[in-house]
Length: 280
Image (cartoon, rainbow, N blue to C red; front, top):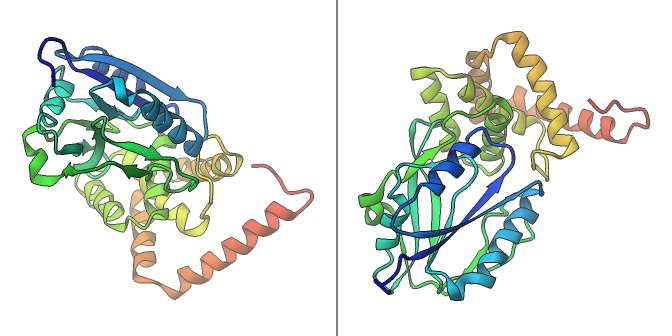
């Protein structure tokens, strides 16, 4: 790669009103040693937003040295983060890197920053739940784990989440079957508490009873679920202890909770189909 100019980096951000967005944008703007083109995509359903972002990279990759996806809830750790990431790609066999972030919810490292060389292109997705799992074409070697230790953690994930953002995090983790992450959130709450963690746990519990196919922030069904939980939790003063007890029962496969889930699924169908069903 040329040393006569700063490497060109396309930074793509998907934004849905995250509390950290402005701080995230400011951290990207401060990066040194690289020339950054930062594109923010907002106001779209998750699947459409991901497809637009990855198509943008497909169109621009021949004229760009590196693509880094920095979500709106992610803050790069310092001003040299992107420059250090670029050094990982000096070996032309390296086509991607998955670099851990420090996650607020779990108080642990989480794989959250994905970076790609121009060798990689994407086949767009049609799956609204796993919309970030594009088919990646052109890989040779992907850096993971110990191979990225020199730049880990590269940033902060959900440093100061607002309630809906935290609820959404827990909801999607449960739907994706990422129970280990949910358990880590439970443990982090036991150690340090935190309103954001309580909301994430509420989202996980809600996903068990009310699984949705489309979970973008702005869908009617997701907003309805969040408002109902908001009313409940505000009355309980964010009682995460009760939520954790419910989640433990769910993870144990409690028969009573399976029956409750069937009841909620029936009630959801009835409310959706009833001609005079309330919208909230």
